[in-house]
Amino acid sequence: MMSSAKRLLLGVWLAAAALAMPSVVTAAERLVTLGGTVTEIVFALGAGDQVVATDASSLYPPQVVDLPRVGYYRSVPVEGVLSVKPDRVLASENAGPAAALTRIAELGVRVDRLTDKPALKSLYERIQGIAKALDRSQQADALIEKIDRDLALVTQAPQAPLRAVVLLNRTGSYMAAGEGTAAAAVLELAGLRNAMSAGKGYKPLSIEGLVALDPDVIVLTSATATAVGGLEAFLQQPAVKATSAAAAGRIGAVDDLLILGIGPRVAQAVRQLREMAQ
Figure (spheres, rainbow, N blue to C red):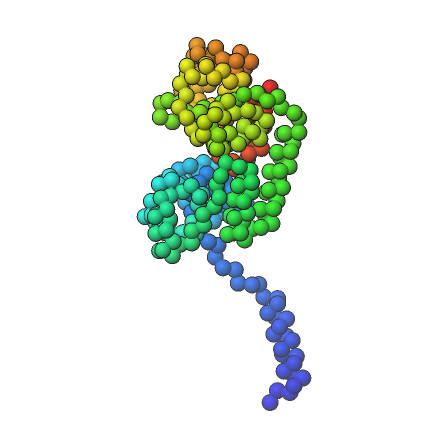
C-alpha cells in the first residue's frame, strides 16, 4: 500500500508534469469572409491563413486573389459557401440576402454580421467585432492604434476646403458619390468638401453635369479610369478640360477599395486625396 508521503509526492510530480505538457490546441476555424474590408481586416489581424474563401469584392491583400470565390457578398450563394466547408462566416452587415445567411447558420455554420457603415467609428467597431470572433483583441488594439497614428500623420497639415467629386463608372455611365457613402466619409477625413453633398448615395452625373458642378478636385476610381480608356483619355475630353479641377491639375484615380470602403488602409486613401488636392 502506498504511504501518505508517497501519494503526496506522486501528486506533486503529476501536477508538475501536467504543467510541463503543452496544452491541446484546437484546429483553427475555417473562415469565409464576405466584404472587401472584412477580408482585409482578417488578414491585418494575422488570421489570413484561416480564410478558405472570399467574395468577389475582396481584392486585398494580393494573396486573396488565389483563394476560391463564393460569389458577390450582396448575393451570397448558400451552396457556394457550404462547398468550402467553413466553420465560420464573417460577413459585412451589407451582405445578403438575409435568407441565405440564415440558411447557412441553420446548417451549422457560425455567421457573424459585422457593422459596415461609412464612418471611421464603424471601421473600429468592425475590427473589434472580428477580433472578438477570432480571439485577437491585442492585434485589434494594435491595428486601431496604427490607423489612428497614420491618420494623424497625414492630416496634421491644414487642408484648404476644396470641393471634390468622386466618380465611378460600372455600367457605361458616371455615378457620383453623395452623402452617406464611404467615399464622402473619406473626402471629409481628407479635409475636402463633397461637391455632391446635396444628394444621398450614388447619383448619375453626366459629363455636362460635371462641367456645371465645376469641382476643384475630380477623383476617379481606378476601375473607372480603366473603363474609360485610362486617366489620360478622361483628361482629354473637352468638357473635362473646362473644369476648375483640370485647370489646377487636380484630377486623379484612387483604388476602388480605398475610396469606396473604409478599411485598415483608410490613411492611405486620405494621403492620396490630399496629395491630389495640392
